[in-house]
Length: 476
Image (cartoon, rainbow, N blue to C red; front, side, top):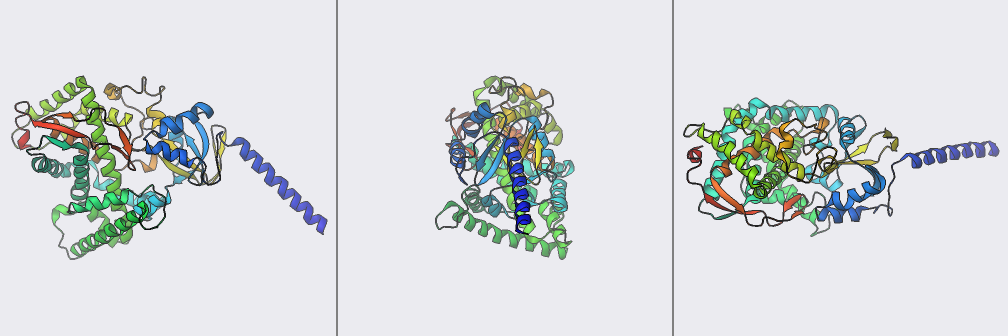
């Protein structure tokens, strides 16, 4: 009997060894580093200098190829680069991989938000967001969006000779998400509270007093308390048929109606508001800042862009707002913005987790391993964009594959707020360039990570009102 058990044990051991050897031979090349720590410190050092691609990814690509293994934050991770890799992993969301964010990000964004959802729950929430951001919904939103930017410039930039461009863009995009998209009026201090939450999204998830994560959790609780009351007040108005007609189409109204119908919970409404605010306002404000940075360095491009906006202003009557037709005329401006975002993507990439063993490019990615795809893997690739480090808006005169140009992701988790971000960027640029002459205070201002990329000085610009070029813009 003992010899029989020993034989069975020997067979199991041999099978395990053979399977382990097969896996170790087929996984991508690379270094795993120390247990748990792996190459995390090198990753964080590169991230803190906003040089993740140059200092962390590129040297390993040169050594191992476009697919390599590493160990980040305690997880074996495969880093992939290139359009085909983006297509494979982003389009196979829910089938082969699922979204996988650090614990600190999940706790601060909320465990009930859409980035944590799969299947029917994901489709339900995404459908609500998509309906609030449809072409018809955005067209209805346009006058309010234009007015929000107009009022801000009239009140905050008046009589100023120097303003913080990045800060202005942050305040405006934050206000637009809350007031134009969600229909929530917020006090200025709420932005400061949100920023305290953001500080901890990539910090180690330790609740020790005084740590970034601890401060972020406290701020998150303040926001959650405020939003719960907003959601409950909205529910009272809807159930009492007291909701104002203009608020019926807001995203908050749509989510609360779904909550009343039992499709989503109150916590899902709160968590998704938090996520949407972060996803929209930080990335959009950075895109705006980088567009102005590139325009300041390429005066020929700025001349072409300015002419496009002058033509739009001259075609409008006094007091007329921008329309969707005007947005369609901003073709060159959008090329400039897209090229700026290509060179300075607001997000480096994102993590996925393999939910089964994955065979890709003759390699095996074991179940449970993380996968990190990167924007820079294609944005800076010579085979995708010739002379990739040069600023050439004309690249976007023709369509570019979504899996080559990926600042908004791709697949089922592609950014649902893409069109709102586009409107925000284009209307802000129009409002500034048609009203002001401007110049950067620090033309070569460095970009740092805090924890997302930001201009080191906040991108201050000198401004002076224009005199003649766009006479109707003050009444837009």
